[in-house]
Amino acid sequence: MPLTILHNPKCSKSRKSLEILKKSGKSFVIKDYMASAITPEELKEVLKKLKASPRQILREKEANEAGIAHLNGLELLNAICKNPRTLERPIVINEDKAVIGRPPENILKIL
Image 1: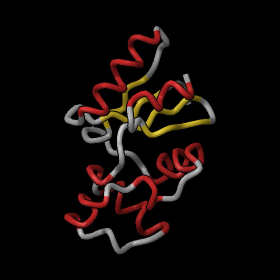
Image 2 (image 1 turned 45 degrees about the horizontal axis):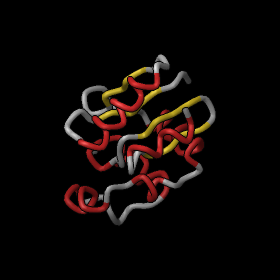
Image 3 (image 1 turned 180 degrees about the vertical axis):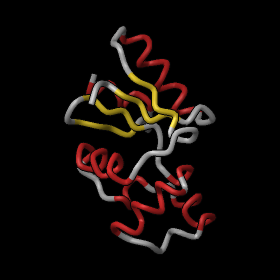
Image 4 (image 1 turned 90 degrees about the vertical axis):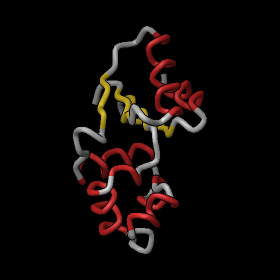
């Protein structure tokens, strides 16, 4: 996968991370996962690169609001895909690694 940002344009951290990527001069792909759903297969790949579980990429407040906070494993992964606002953001992927841009400067670790 080329350098990619899983981006939510309404999120200030996501916008700041996008700004850092633009300043890096590297070419990258923007995936607005709110407009174009992320599939369970894509999310599994992202989790592998993050070395994380679905629970670790879950926004708790939004998960509670969506009624999915009690789920685990594959059920939670599928629920995150169906409720994209519950996904922690932004996530930047560079080949076999990924980081969550919180704070946005975290993405510098994989550029």
